[in-house]
Image (cartoon, one colour):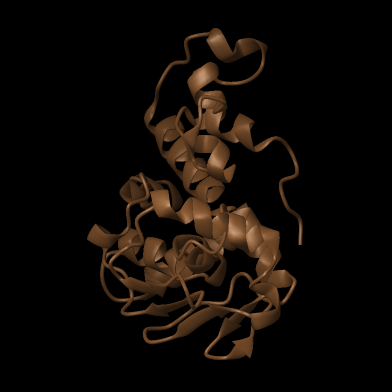
Length: 208
């Protein structure tokens, strides 16, 4: 599957906010948004006219980049969300939040969602005791996510666990950091999703 392979920091600068794509670096003074708070490229300093469509598009792009999704997959999730009962925007965020790569990141077993995807593809993550190597796998309430015993001594896992002390685990998840194991207590409500995304703008964009 195609993936963005450019500089992650450029994505943050393009959206004008921290997307936390570089793990621990995002919390230091090396963060590109802190050092160069303007869009990349020669036109970065120019004043851009804000319009409704541009605002909606930028919000969608920001959401895609936070979770590391491409357009086809993101739109597919929107279509699923629009067919579910409830508020489409909230359904969309809930679907994306329950991806396995996001859960591994939220539990503190990876320093970024990219790192979580890599660990999953390498077979380091178990769901209910069974190995799952699909980052887009959607977890359910009461699922138990853990790090495979053979992977528990990997430097990348240990480094993430140490860094996780600065990140609060959301209330819909429970983690036992000593056992490298977490449980999905329930599917998240909108109030429990702390991503800085205005989902209604995304719905308005796709509804046109």
